[in-house]
Picture 1 (cartoon, one colour):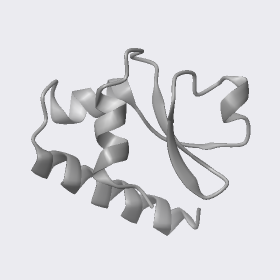
Picture 2: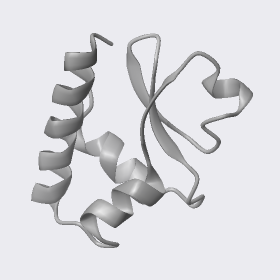
Picture 3: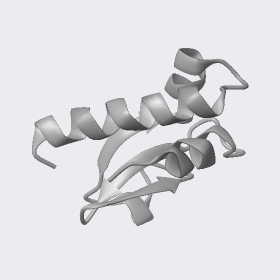
Picture 4: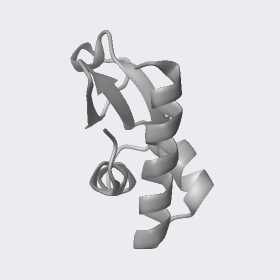
Length: 79
């Protein structure tokens, strides 16, 4: 569901308010989680929270680990 490419894309987003969301069962990075393109989406994590968690330059292993954790967490929500 969420893989390290999603996490990497979020880390590289220009906007600190960008977020990883689930919309219609698919993970995607959006610039404005409260914008029209995200209506009905489940907010998974914001760039700000991700950088706080991993630092500004996470390793590939960090990205992989966080992707697994986020997938597990979302799965437990039933999303």
